[in-house]
Amino acid sequence: MAERITVYTTGPSCARCTLTKNVLTSKGIEYDEVNIRDNEDARAYVVDDLGYTEAPVVVVTDEDHWSGFRPDHINRIATH
Image (spheres, rainbow, N blue to C red):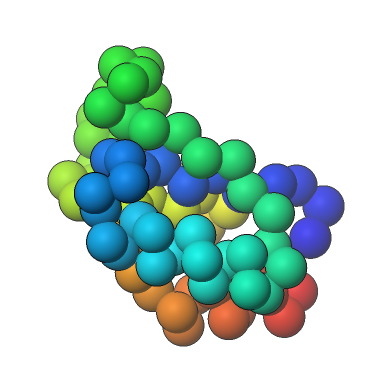
């Protein structure tokens, strides 16, 4: 995978966020984490532009993103 992905989280108290990050790491997928509680622009992007209302939000590309803990998607991107 050429580009790093971004994981938008709501912080360490988000169990699905932590689980998603742990599985990404275990699959060797590098990512940048952005806490949308600390970053208003990132929160606006996730909610207003992408239309998600729950964390985590994983953005691989402008066309490839999802919300929540989705091991099926993590496995899909790990095989690229």
